[in-house]
Image (cartoon, rainbow, N blue to C red; front, side, top):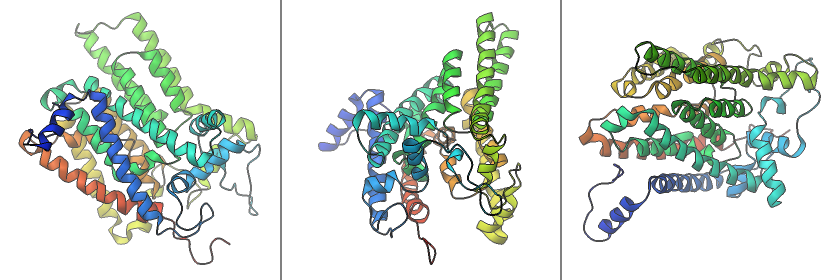
Length: 414
């Protein structure tokens, strides 16, 4: 059994339970993911009924239009169809304006290739490709939990599928079926961590390089590599796990790949435009304060979102994350899974300006779902998991209505 279904009930329920039990692991993963995406599609279609006309769509857009061209999906569409500008657009005040260089190329170029083969338009191909990449990501996440958290899986055999379920219904998981990079990033992060767990260092290096052209997450991945190498070195000193020369060479190559992953896209941006810090200036165009400084944006952004409650909200969120990371459930994970979430969330805290995108970014801290699913005692796991899934499904509707639906200000578009 996969650990997520109750004992067979009489009649039709028993037949369904038996059919579920006969599914291979990958079949259960795909069923769970498909069910979650079907719910998200219903949410998006319902919310689209309340969407007024925007620069991207007309009022009450179709599902594919709503998932294919809204928000940043239009930037990725522009990249797929026209590439990147050779010069940075500059406003009347001499400041760099928002432009395509803020967005990484692997996803739009991948969709462009599929468009060339299928002759389909962006708004059709991009959501379909994103959904398929999301399904592949869930398969890899399942395997990652199996191989990367053997102690946790021994204590909770249903943990890999429970992780897939929680990630699939996470409030912002709606973007896994839109023209965004989250699906591809999730696949590459999970793939990198799995390859690292299995000690396939050159495969890990290749995936990390691809990740560098998808999302700017090289630094937290490098920290996970350091944790993995330190764990292996410590085991080698105690004679439990000999560190061979090939392993040292592979880890060295992986370190180089992580460095290149973090530097390649900003360097390319500067080289093409002739402005060395073009990437940072472009990122600054999206910020209330154009200076890109570690941790500083949390002060003014938190006050904007939460007013006088900002300090309380920040302390509660930080304390919750720390409690989960230090929990017994977390300590049962392998070092790679256990270290990714704090490394990634710490990186987010240092480099981003808090805003609506934060909910999307949090999706990539998917081992937190593993920790959450492993928290309850055995007798409470199923009812609590069911409750969490119901709450998250409801929050998907709230997320889509409040954040994906665009309510243009008065007089917009100009």
